[in-house]
Image (cartoon, rainbow over all chains, first blue to last red):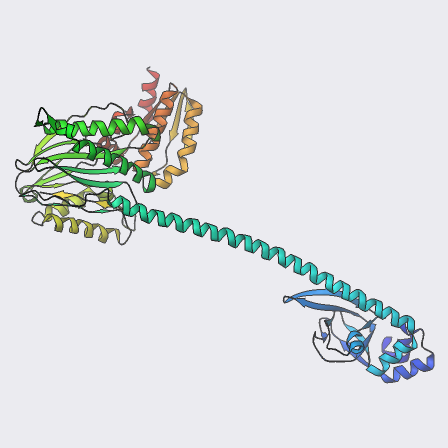
Length: 424
Length: 111
């Protein structure tokens, strides 16, 4: 039906032209053109040049602006309303985008027609002024709300960033402290490994973490005796390292204290030194730190190099191995007591064995035999023993390197703690 | 970790891998359970195929705790390699260890 209506008839139906006489409206109708928009089609974009104004004959159009690339719909104008009136008023580019919400028919008013419209109807002019002002307020308010939202987001992001930064600083401080602790822990290993005449002693220690619970010691005692220690505090990392520091110091100090070897001017026998030092270390640790339920497995052997006599106590540690006869024979120095730190007033009994020329004594922690390959299978006792038997002619230093290499090959880069004091 | 009560004995079935992660996963629940029970407890280790030193520590902690409450924590069903670890560390002297649950329960019942 609208198809058959003339532009004059269509404009006449629009209330804003009520103030126009038929003659004036006829003249206006002669000056306007018609434009059709499909739903979603853009009439003009924000920033476009243009001075045309549009009367909506039939349809709906939305006014859209952008804040930070995000669309904000300012308003929707419907049939009978004017749209696009701001640019001709202030002679500036379009302040917002206008897009058809549904299929729409528009009457296009050029600058002259629009002004004649405004001048002919002061009510209409005031109405437009009101609309313009209202839209300005609405736009400002929406932009302020948008900015406030953004501001809240930014503040939160800033708080998150500050928290992450604080965490990073905290983390770096811990890393620094760990690296200092690692340097300190090195001093809990012997500065040099004694090499009594006719013997070779070598050792290696590498933690699975920065600091850890495995350690060895070679305690030089009067009469060229050497205290050989291999130990493993339960767990890993800082708690284990604290018990390493504690028990290593106690054992070394009580082994080297003058009262440990002298009685009426003579050295105490080896049994008494070994069992006394272990008794003291265990009793102190269990009494003072028993509530931690931490413990340290410890092998402590005193070697008398001239005789090849080894007096030892194995407190819950992996039995050290003695390989003899070029790999033909092997025996273990079995554990006879609980680890250090569990029961107070534990009495230790010393055992004795003799190392002959060509014998190899190997002490190690479970980091050696429990090193895992990528499939989660342990290196294992058998592989370890086979390696030792195969290399009985290697020097102590070479043997230690061979063990480390073999484990590293097996574990294919997965770092594990290994410790292997060796001597013969 | 499954827990069931058989008569007056709390039977706790320990998971297969008692490494640092495995221990951390059950440590608290185990202490809470045994502390709440107070009396006779039995750790069924037949499913355990790996124990780290931290697992020994966890068992020791629980043993001390239940013993101080007048109870006990016993072990059963140790696989050969686990038995070997208990032997080497002499932890076998701290715990009463049985071949299987049945004999452990009978041991408790006979007292």
